[in-house]
Image (cartoon, rainbow, N blue to C red; front, side):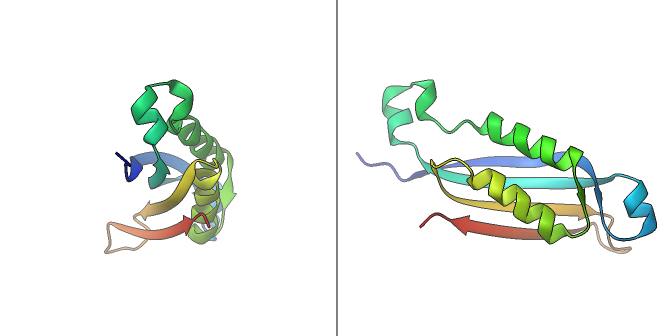
Length: 121
């Protein structure tokens, strides 16, 4: 039996970072909410049940946390692009999508978000 891609979802990762252009945004960390979808071929992991055959989502999550919490970003696009690169870093990953929400960015909206996706050739 040939399995389809396995899809890992990291849902509502809530972090704080410097993001934006306004003076208060440059001085005070803001909340961001990150959602990541990562696909990979999991045939070996499903058949062998061995650790090295599966994509290690904990390593990816730790890299995302470190990048966000230690970084400074002006554009939501730059932050999202950086996180997509982290998600795609493993050669096991066939495709990934990252959505970053910036809550309270607009007065009458719950959030502003940006989503970027990539697929390995």
